[in-house]
Length: 241
Image (cartoon, rainbow, N blue to C red; front, side):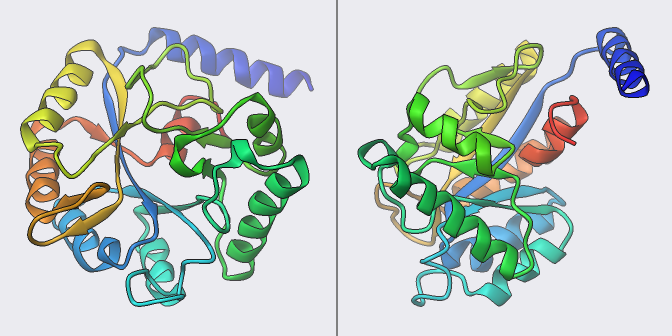
């Protein structure tokens, strides 16, 4: 017990002495096949990591979503983290307690059975409340939200079960994303860019064009900002073992 306390105190001391820096994380929701076909090659080109939160009932269900082998390739690449986005993608705030438990546990058990060890959860539609978070805590080590401000995470005040992110929609331009990255760098904040389906041609609602992701990835690489998976950020700051 004393040894753990000493390690924590040393970590806190070193953290307080270390200069602050900005961080950016890239995440993808649902498990679309375009993540493997389009996003993976782009991020690999710029040597950037990412986190993908999958809906387990979607994986391998149809051609629009990745299969388990493709997800395994992402995981084994070494720079991709696999998290849960529930089993069937319901609005968890509309469910009873036992139904919420089923969504979280079923997803986790399936991922584990396929060789993944998810530590993070992202609520479908970005919808959650205190009751949902209480259950999330029992199954996962962190929770990423979506679609609600503030868009940035303060390095000194991270709530691992209310991690903020910016959802990228069909009409979100590269210039808007660049502005948010620049702001994170200037203010030394942690920014999470949350994508869904990465398509060629004109995107719809939760989709993004490949060119937007390509330009974003290139800018992140050129800016030399620290790009990190969500779990690696939390580990680096002593919020995840």
